[in-house]
Image (cartoon, rainbow, N blue to C red; front, side, top):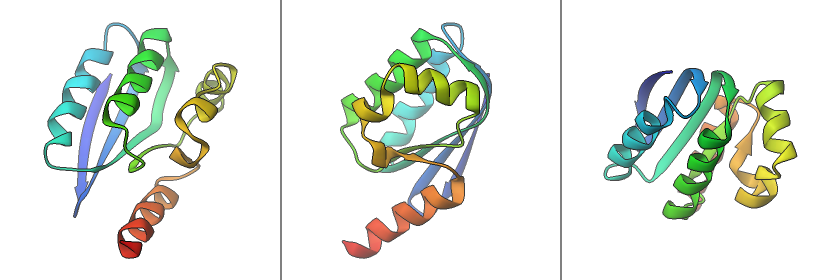
Length: 117
C-alpha cells in the first residue's frame, strides 16, 4: 500500500492506494500516530483502496476507538470495501457521521465543525 499525506491548515488527509491488509496496516498505524501529535482532524481517504482484510478493519476500529475523536472521517469507499464495512456494521460501530461519500464532503464537514467552535 502507498500512503500519501496531504495537509490543509489543521486537517491531515491520509490518501491510501492499494490493499489495506496484514502486510501494510502497520504503516498506516504509524503514520496516523505521527499525525495525531499535530492534527486533531484526520480524513482517511479510501479512494485508492481495492481490498481490506480483517487486520485492516481491526486497526481502523482501534485507531478510531483509541483517539475517540469525532474529527476522524472515512471517505471514498469503493463499493467492494463499503460492502465489507456494511457486513461488519462499521458505520454503526464507529458512527454514521464519520463516513462521507467524497473528500469535499469530509472537508466541508470538518470546516463547518471548526466554525461552530
